[in-house]
Length: 385
Image (cartoon, rainbow, N blue to C red; front, side, top):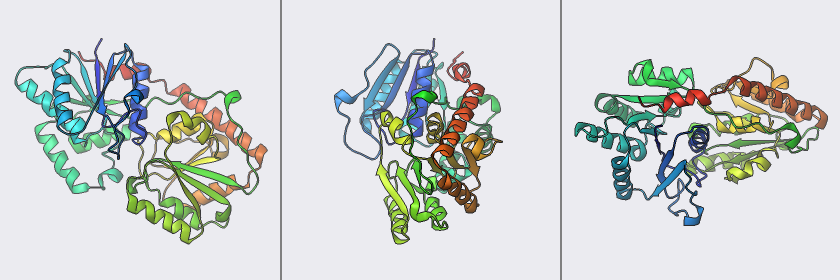
C-alpha cells in the first residue's frame, strides 16, 4: 500500500488556514494509507511556535513533521524525500505555494534527472486557485508563475479538482489532458442526528447571521454591508464575522462602514474545530456571499448542524428546491435584493416556523450525503502504479 506525504503550509493544531486543513484531515481520516503531514510549526500569520504538547500525537497511520520556515524546511524536505519509499505519493494543497509545492516538486525533478525516486507520484490540489475570481488577485505574478511552471515543471503531475468546472479551468490554464485530473469532491462532514441538535431560540423580527472564512477581498465580505444597508430591518439584524484577518486595511473599511451606518456587524475572531458545535447552532443562518468556492467547508458544516445557508451561486451547493424546502439558497451576487428578500423572510419567522425550516435543512443535507459517497473514489488519487 502506498504511503502518502501531504505537503501543506499550515495544519492542525493551527486554526487560521480554514478549508484546506479540514479537507486534508477528512481525506486522511477516510483513506487506509499510512500518511505523513509535512507542515510548519506555527499557525498562519504568527511567529509563535506551537507548544510541543500541542503537536498531534503520532499513530500507526499518521506521522506529523513540524518544521520552521526557511532553510530548515528545505533541509527537512530533502531528508523526507530521500527516505521516501518507491510508489509513494506526494499530495500538495496549493498550486502557487512556493515552499510546500514548488520546492518539493523541484527536489523530485532533480532526483529524477539523477535517476532517483522515479516512482513518486505528484498530486496538486489547487483549491479553486484557477478560478477567474481568484486569479485576479496578484494576476500578473500568477501569470508569470504559471508560464514558467507549464514550460519547465508540469510533466507527469496529476491534479485533484473538486468540481467539473474546476477541472475545466485547470485544463484551460495549464493545457493538460483530462486523464491527469481526478475530479472528486471533498468529503462532507457527518450529519448530526436530529435528537442531538441544540435548540436555537427564534423570535419574530429577530435574526442572527454569521460569516465564517478569511477576512480578505477575495472572500467578498464587504458585500454583507451592502446587503444590510438596503434593508429596513437592518437595526434588528446581527451579523457576526468569524475568521482570521488577512487584510487589515480591508477589515477596517468593513467595520468603519458598519459603524457609520449603524449596521450590527461584529468581528468575533477565530474558533477551534471543537467549538463549531456550539457556535454554528447559536445562529439562524450562514451568510456567505463568496466570489468563488470550489467547496465551502463553512457551508457543509452549517448544513451538517441543520443551520440554513444563504450563499452566492459561485459554490457547488445548489438545489432545485426553494429555500423554505431545503434551507439552501444560492444567489447571484449582483442581485442584492434577492439576499435581502431571503433575510427578510428569515427575520419574519417565529420559533415553530424556524424549527420546520431547520428540519427541512436536515432532510436536504441527508439527501446530499446519500448521493455523495466518495471514499472509494479518493483511493484512485493515491494509487501509484
